[in-house]
Image (cartoon, rainbow, N blue to C red; front, side, top):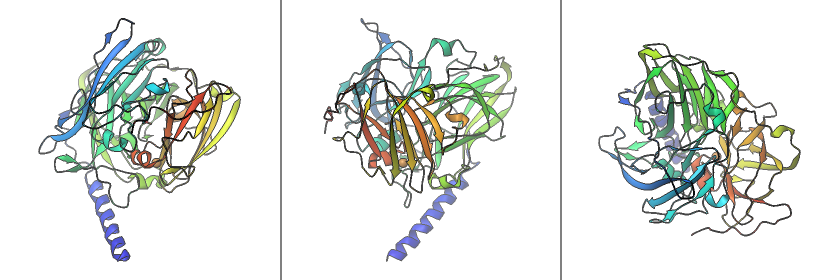
Length: 482
Ligand code: C2O
Ligand code: CU
């Protein structure tokens, strides 16, 4: 019987791969790209910028015969783009109308642990949670998404996420494209599977990494095209998928400039032709256009054959870009963008090792009652993360942007020369990260670190750390609502 089942499984996998490969070139690009609107905000009496977000259910036209049941924020799918300046205090009223408990996490944001929106900050169905913090980090493309214990994958997959853009005066002064929705365009890229008009949440057999779709949505738009009217366009890419690793390039293989990563602008622009982004990672790129031309943003198989398990053989046409017959001039991209990460010169007080295997870290599954790591505030640590597994993972740390010190013992590639909060770990890879926690200490309320392939995270590939004052001991995790 086992043999028969295995044989059936092989046939299923083969058929599935074919279907996916067959979709290449069949995208019609007949819908204008939807750009998430900027969230409205107001000032309260304390001078804080206040946003109101409601997580809700709805139905969305995703190009299927009927509208697809989806979840979103202030709408039926995805959510508005929040925007705040460095130094500003923000307050976000997060109301949960999903019909079940959830959370809302600010991915990439430096903030107190009780404001983080991780699994300990449950927003009960029907309740409103109002985190507040001072935005204090360089200009960057951050994002938000639910993080309920064991249910992150389905909540994100159904559509609850959006962008949080941080601005700062230094970045604002640079001659980079910055007109939101005109020459500075966010692209939330997500693969989906459908069963008729419904999102298919079942994991394919014999795939360990969670949902891999056969269709790509950008900002929730199927088959999108983008009209551009300027010579240069900045695209802010977010891999908002559950498990898919993308390798972005253009159909004509044109070079483009990589100018930013998870934590903000790179020290200097780097010319590339392709770029890998794993789930949760962001990149900002600047692309040049000639009047009247058209090209297609694609994802092609990854170079590293170890990544095949993550659907690396799948190819997608993602977005058609159409340049107008006359383009507004854009200034050249500056040669210097932002200070380089500077933790390399710091004394490393603690070195920790994290081995990713199966759906565990160092052999442990996530336990909300257990603190795995106690870090002392204002010290620099080296976190060595190894993938010991057979298929790809990545590694995300809450609260901080870290410096990638080495990848497999070498200097990091250009894409990892700025601040990161998530790094890709192909099979057998090892990264050394320099990490420094600052400002907020709380022995009782942990932050998370985890694989951002959401099924792995839900299955327990996650740990908890607290940041304490010198000499302080870890307390008991609090605030966890069951
Ligand atoms: Cu993007 Cu712990 O999450
Ligand atoms: Cu993983």
